[in-house]
Each structure stands twice: as C-alpha cells, then as structure tokens.
Image 1 (cartoon, rainbow over the protein chains, first blue to last red):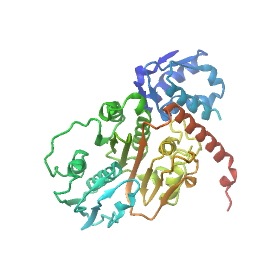
Image 2 (cartoon, each protein chain N blue to C red):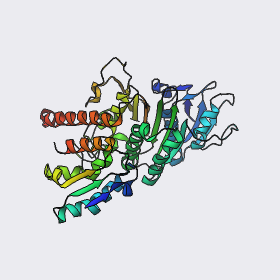
Image 3 (cartoon, each protein chain N blue to C red):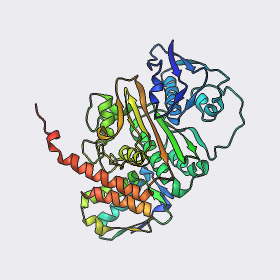
Image 4 (cartoon, each protein chain N blue to C red):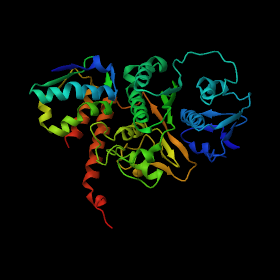
Length: 94
Length: 325
C-alpha cells in the first residue's frame, strides 16, 4: 500500500489529527490484514514535526520492534523529513 | 479596584518587569489597566500575556477600565499588534493600516486545528521567510500551539503573535492561553505539589501529561517542550515558560561555549522562580535566530539524540522510582 502524504497533510505535515486518521484508517488495517509493505511517499512534503511523525508511526515501531523496519518504506523524503523520521524511529525502538 | 500595571519595558531578559506593582489578584471583579505614562516597549511574550488576561477578564466577568497617555510613541506598534482590541478596547490613535508583511504577526487567536493549519500556511508570506528558513519557526509554532489545543482545555483557545527583526534575523514569539495551566495538565503523569515542579517536569524529555509512562503514548511523546527549549538553546536565545506562580527562563550563553541539551532543565543555565503572582494559564516566549540556526535536519537529529539519551538515563534511574515509605 502506498500513501501519498502531501495529499493528506500538505507541504508542512504537522496536523496530528491527520496523522491519527492516516494511522487508524489506512496504516493499521493494512498492517494487520496483509504482509504488504506500507509505503509512505513524502513527495511534495517539505517538512514535518516530531509530534506528527510520532503520532503517525511511533506506535507501530514500539509494538512491532525491528520488524516494523521491514514493513515500512519512506519514499521521496527531504533531508528535514528524513531526520525527523530517523529520530522518531530510533527512540521508538529503544 | 485591582490594578494591572503595564510597565515600560517587557522583554524575555527582563520579564520580571511584568510583576512590578502587580499581584494579578482580580478577585474584586474590577480592574484598572494602567500603562506606564512615558513609554511601553513590549516583546510578543508581553502581548501574549496581556491577551490572556483579556480572556481571563472576559471569562470571569471582570470589568476593566484603562488609562493610557496618548503621547506614548509605541501606541501604533501596540495597536497594530492587536493589544487594545484583544483587551476589549477600540484603538486609541488613527494609524494607516499596514499590511502584515515582513515584520510581524499581530495577536491571533487559534481555537481549532484548522485555524492553526491556516496560520502556519500564511507564515512565509507574512514574515518574508522561505520554506528553508522557516522550518524551525513553523516547528516551534506547531508544537506550542498544538499543546494549547490539546492540553490547555482553554475555552477560548490560545493567542500567538510574533515580530521579525530583519537586521538581526531574529523572530520573537509569544504564545498564551487561559487554560488549566501546566500543574493541572500534568495530572495524567503525576500529581505534583507545585507549579514549579510541574513546569520542570513538563520540560523533561519523554514526560507527557497524558500518561504515567516515560516516553509518552502513541499520541504524545512528551517531547514538544523539550524540542522547543533545545531550539532556543541551539540559537543561544531565551526561552520562557510561565504558568501558575512559577516560571522557567533559559538564559543566553556566549557563542564560544559549547551547546549542551540537558534532559534535566535544572542543569540548564536558567532562572527558575516560584511564589510569583499567579498567572491563570500558560504563557511562552521564545526568540529564534533563523539564519545562524544549524540546518533544521541536523538540529532535529542532535535534539533527537539528546532526547533518546536523556530518556534512557531517566528510565534506567530506577532508584528515583522505588517507593520508600
């Protein structure tokens, strides 16, 4: 499954309500119903916040541990988005 | 009649001036708002503070009257920033309506997530910043205003305003609400006995008011205030948070000194005060230099590393968590 992030959250991804919606409406059902890889495509997203990325994915990395690294792919991230995802994934896996 | 005295200078460095002649006790239901007779210079933190008082008066049916010397030269500035209208008064002088471009964001009320999203979209054209230079600023606005929307329970939302000093490349921000304050907002984590203790814990990485669990929940990492404080630290600026009878104020450090992000705010070079006049809500002030900021991505990585290290240390420090009777 591929989610085009910009379509849901604009160029600055910060709205945690939207993160929660994406998480519960799309990501969780997809993770639970198949072994497919979840692709979060950040084309068009310039930046984000730690809170947004946390609300979007931290729960899965905490629940699944390192397995989550095999289930998620992050495409077309800017350096800013990459650094926030890296930060959230790192602390979620500890 | 109670008094709300507005002093001649309010900055983050001399924030204590707001307590001059004030006890913030308005229990008799009538307040005389008195401006300094000669000059009033005000950082956005001051504007946000008085905007919150305006809400407090409105919510509690407190009647106000105000005295101001019309000769004060900063009246047009205060007027454009929306101070008088926020306090429920018409503008004292006639000014040409300037476009809010390149210099300031006047007091803006944010009550919903959609209003916040719109506000964030408008920042670049207003401040004449670009996506590259405003990432840090937007991050700060978003984290702090989402805190207001999610945790303050303020019936009137929050206020935000900012000024941009183009020469110094510095953005000064003030944010406030008249919600339940940090002490009550932290009950999900722990019941603290003082505002000061609650504020200091709210600044620790991984402490969220929504859960007892260090590291927060999948909704809240307990990182927003810690990240914001670190952003101020990274640009060697002030950061102030005042709630109830206490405040924490991060002080500036010389550029020769190495930047260190401390998990425990008591290890910071900061002023921490309690037993101050009681503020009914939370107010935050922060300055950010946008051009000498370490690139946003590197900054986030550095703060993130510090967050992880501090959280690990706090989790491992079991001694503090053993219950001794």
